[in-house]
Image 1 (cartoon, helix red, strand yellow):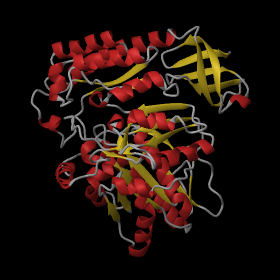
Image 2 (image 1 turned 60 degrees about the horizontal axis):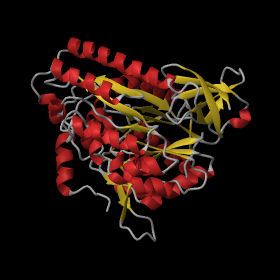
Image 3 (image 1 turned 180 degrees about the horizontal axis):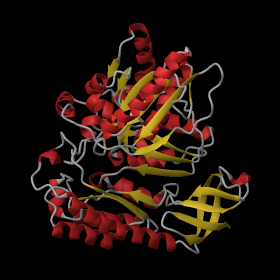
Length: 486
């Protein structure tokens, strides 16, 4: 059955999360929203980080809608401002405090105008790691809520109104959150994220996720299906199944099933039966949890896109062991061979960290060799950054910044070359493209996504928006494709 957070895990997470310090953040996007009505409260949600945070921001908007909040695209004039934070890079909290300084001025202006007050909330992983510190350093903040508690937003707003004092919620209530999320979502567009699993039990020595998101918990199949059916009814054609370690999914099976639980491969086959859903993706995966059923699904389920993000992090077995990845490079290489045998047209994506403590020139060259051997259609690569409270932060032999930078440049040049070559290999092929919108240039072209996630531009009318059409690829750059409607 789905994992719950046992007492030992709670103690471990509680003890470690208090040690975490600020990391850098990467802004993902704000919500794609329509203007609020004249009698509606206004909420602005700024999202930092990964797809999980994007999904969480969307769900916060869903939760707030029944109590009168409509999303807007600017903090100015908002009744409620939420910063949904990420803890993946250095100095994350400092960037949050800088943003809070700007918001404080807006709040003061709104208070002085007599048009009501602005409530300010900090959510997400920085909130989970540094809740008490945020309320101490930034009095402008009224509410702090961790990523497992945003389902309590209406209750927190009510508590704030009653007490006029800051409200702090950082408990790990993942299953409760899953149970209380509203089925209906406010969605705009034809592709959507759906969280099916949260947390991670792998404890890689560079990663804060087990301490800010908690232990692995899987969502029941019936809940996932109800959400996706609602999305399909709104015109969504593609869903991406999300999790911090999504292929560790083992959720309670649907009502009437002869099985107790489904793995990710079985869930994909089940979701593929939902009318209106034509494309399925999943992210992010761990090599230790790529089981036989999921490998087989790549070959048997036509709606599962031929694109897999499977992080390697390093090609050196010594560094993989130091990272506590729990697999060797040979295991990863053989796994990729088996997946490609099941799905020959698969494109692979990965994550890489250079300059992990103790990484020598030979270790880095092992990563370069691995990249050449595997071949990637896209990848994300980073310099190792210390995350206080994680084991990596206390390791000896930290790599100098200039060495990290030189290695990252070399790696990124190789990855960029592979990405460009992969995109150019698609020239002359006809691909199904999900059309997302008409070009803002008003030049008679539209924009969509190919199966391998590249943005694709071609001439077509607005009637194609929301449709999956066949496009013959005529040109390719590093990040996008150009084609003709077939």
